[in-house]
Image (cartoon, rainbow, N blue to C red; front, side):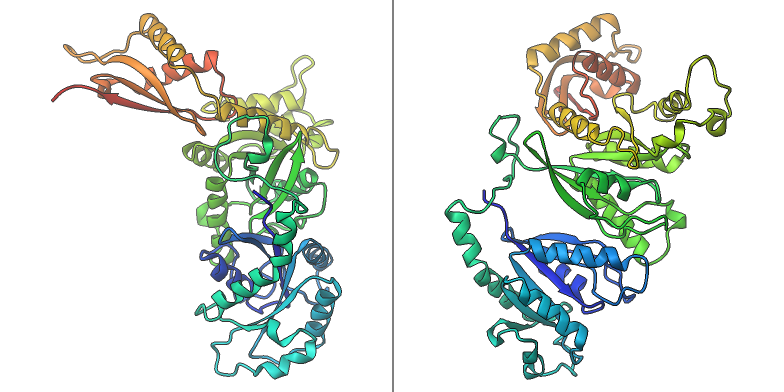
Length: 470
């Protein structure tokens, strides 16, 4: 499968770009609010499996500490795009900023379409008012993100503009990306989907800094101000010939502390990112490791059946720290603050004994690339298929060493076990009266399986089916 072409959506703030992207994608991806500058990072959506639409932050005068980074991101989107959509509010006359945006887009040499949004409003201006921007009349489209008017016609225009790209792709001139579907671990990586890693955690834990370090460029806006990242930000990298897509999510606070509006939507998108990802990196601040919210997030990741890595951020701050500064314990022997931190995490997350713990520092680069290595290991574990004969050997050993308890005259009798799925690995146990199995014996069986097949960083699921005849 050839790579999908990229369409960049640019324009001033409050032109309706985010609403337009959501309408094009038939679902809410970008955050929409009346507040100007809601979109700060590039938001990406695949439209009808035919092209990728990138919604950029609105262009405006650099009046705050985010604007310089925003301008770079928009220029990045223009440079990467195959088609550019200049978006304006059709109810307002264009100004010098709109003219500058259109000029920059035309200067790129890419196909440029003018999207006049909000055409459902009564005060929408005639097309003649916008022709001075220099965009060809046949490339001007009236649309309404609210009602959907003109959207399908615009999609046809985008696809017409992409004919040159697709012609090059058909001749093998366009780079390839992964297709969809489970490809296992065949060396022919060209048919594998990209491996998706989501960075999950509380606000200000260092997600955007780690995201930038992993992506090796300033893709997300980094600031000490809480709540900088609102949308799910993405970047693709290649490691050992494998394509990885990294998702930077908004920081989640306790539900009762989330503000109404944008922060509520960000929380929803973070939970959606967990569902989309293959592996979730749960970020924990080395200076504040105690949090019930971290445990709750871990529980959501497990429930979703995703791979998980415990990523400790800001580990450089531990080098000269005394353990008592964080945990109220005295240093023993040669043990360091990092040793005590890992002990604390193992205690707080005792329900995640299979999750690797990685100490990282985005400032020094410590163990940043090691996260890629762990991701590949976890991906391999998620795709592991255990032979039925091996599984039943483990089940028989478990039955001999620790037979399951039952009622006075009835005992559960597991007979055989099979693996029915991967990502996550799923095992089905068949037998008699399995409804009587105690949860502790189920956990015991999981431990026995993990002794031989560790399934590093991935939960494993069980179903217990009684084959009793009624």
